[in-house]
Image (cartoon, rainbow, N blue to C red; front, side, top):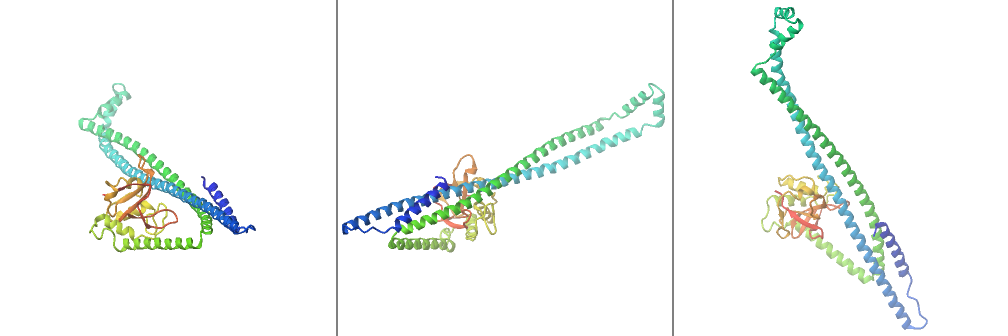
Length: 386
């Protein structure tokens, strides 16, 4: 269901439930039996409204999960374009340097040819020139004489051939430079378009998140109105218990990482320890620290501390080392979410495993770096960077 239709449907149901809850059970002049029947009917009506509210809430959460995944894909597509742009810029710089070198080689090759030509013409005396002009065909005879004098020996011919070869190389490098420049310009344009798409998606995400939050607040009010006081107390106790468990899990991960007991350290332990020190820093798309991160920016910096360079892109991080079965995960391994196809852009999220089925990751806009379970429906695999 589209979000606007869903929110309108939610608002309509909310009004209906509020009206239902505002009407007290009607008094039946016929006696207690009628009152009991009315009470039971009201309970059934409330139960139905509660079921609809819960369904709407689940639909809103599912839509938000899809929206976050779409945005992450666009953000990672932008990160990938930046990687490709940097590669194109490096290639252009290299071929530009080679072009300057080729130009210098051509100039060096011209020097002996020019020197020989100058020497040959300098050796032609004035009397020889006059004789050539007065005999034979006059001026034509002079030109024939000059042509004979300009014929180069084997060494001079080699110099001419070298000049020709270096000029050919220069033409080839010029073509390569033009091609590299075009590739760089195309990658820059693709990066610009990807950035615009990501920015637009984030803005739309923020707008829809605000709309969903408003709708879910209304749903929450409906749920609260449909629950008894005892149910609300029970739910509050459960939420406090879950909050305590999450806090204990986070503290345990920070105080005694899962690999501490077994002595597992190495690069993965270094990366995981550093990532845990970033908890609470805000998610900002395309950011790679030090004050904010997106998902692949966090994992890139974590493994950078361990001495291994990764690109700021889930697409190449997925191929940064051997793929590891989930049951063999070690601290520092990268866990990926999305779909695995020939297109690495379908992987839209990455976290860093810390043990006990947990990862540290930068989730999405409006969230912060935090610890979460790796067990999600879109978990596709893991990589151990090398």
